[in-house]
Amino acid sequence: MENDSQKHIDDIDLNNQNNTFQTGELFHYLGFTRDTLRHYETMGFINPCHDQTNNYRQYGFDEIYKLLVIEFYKKRGFTLAEINQLLDQDQLTHLTDNFNQKQAAIEQEIHKQQLLLLKLADTQAFCQSLPQHLNQFSIMDFPLYEIVSSFSAISTFDEYQEKVLAHLNLADEDLLTNMIRCVTFDASQYHDTEMHLVALAADRETGKNYLNNGPCLHIVVESGRYSDATNQVIDKTRLAAYQWAKKNQLRLTGTVYLHVRLILFHDNIEQAFVEAWAPIDQNNY
Image (tube, rainbow, N blue to C red; front, side, top):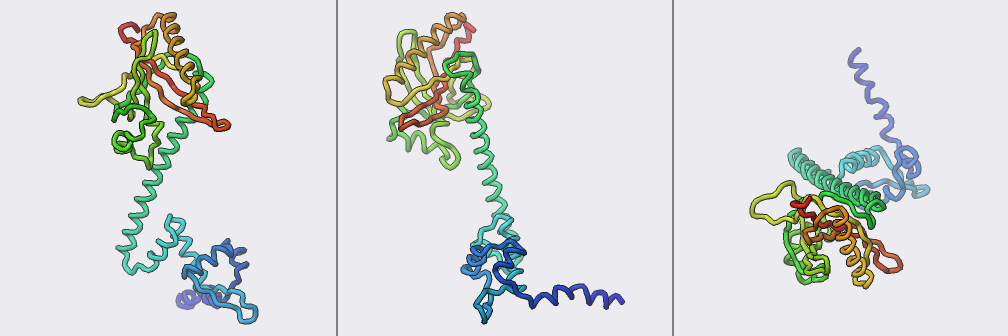
């Protein structure tokens, strides 16, 4: 009785193995589009026969089973070229190596996407807080940034190779996010300026240079590159900063850090939103 029962387990599959299906039927039953089937056929994954009466493609059990196997590997992140190699593997150890490599590649891609999400969240938070800080002074703590390298100005592109690109992973990082302009000034004028390539740091380490972190007079200003209006905005901001600090009985150290946070273009005219941080004298705070 057990043998009779066992004999019937695969009867349905055995009876269906001679069935064939046309392209439209495969789309209806399994979701494979005509373009997908033609592409798989071109790559040599499947080789459907043709109906002699109408020349329509006919897909048998073996071809359909190959389609299911292809989808199995595609849903694990393998490209068709990789699947073609996988299906030709004759040892499980080689297949396991392929799985390990694919897993490592996917984990690296996940890490990259997580970094993108963090950057998007940071920029989104800046946009949401922009109305609160645009042309409005407040006291905020400036993060701790390590100075990775320094160069003359954002426009000295001949210095980038050695002082910027050599220290930056352009696969994950953009230039603007990692550059901060340092300007020294007093109540009457600006004195000097320098660009710094920076990296956020958790703590200070001996032998490394850092921007001055801690309480700062903070404001977001709108400016445009190379325009007289830009200089006027920055100068007015400097004067307003001194007036605000004096009114609130604070003393500035004479340094301001300028960080470009967002740039838009209207009719090819640049609109930049720059975060300005002016450290406050700790002895007077």
